[in-house]
Image 1: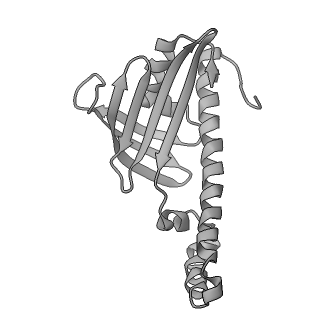
Image 2: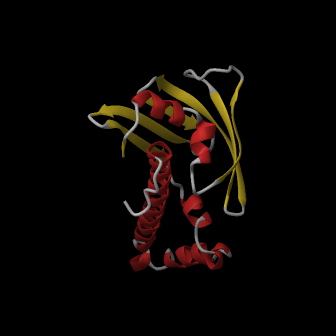
Image 3: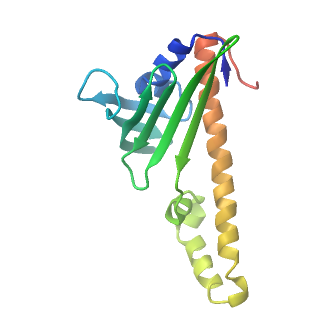
Length: 178
């Protein structure tokens, strides 16, 4: 995402996880703090407590790469872990902000994201029954692939809304619809 702001300004915001999280329209920040030392470095640990919908989510993440003002990478201390890599590169009119998120999505995670009717075990029961019929066994990987694609689309839209909010923070305008 192109932002009309100085590289150092943008990097300072995206490496300050509390400020950055406060711009995320998909969550409510309860607490984000740097544990221990007052300055960020490789090895720094962050505590996150956020509300997503009606759920409270708590986790820790660790800075695994810190190269100001260009690169900031964290890895969560969750099972499975997820990584967030943020780069800020200079452009003619400001900078380019890129955020990449990587997560191994398990079948259990996909099941947990199913609509409420499926949470009663309906999906798992259908998959179990499909395995009883040899001709239907190939459906489970196809269903899982479809679930992964839906999740990827949803997360991509959420990330774009967050990046739009960061851009609006610097450029002082509403970037909805752009």
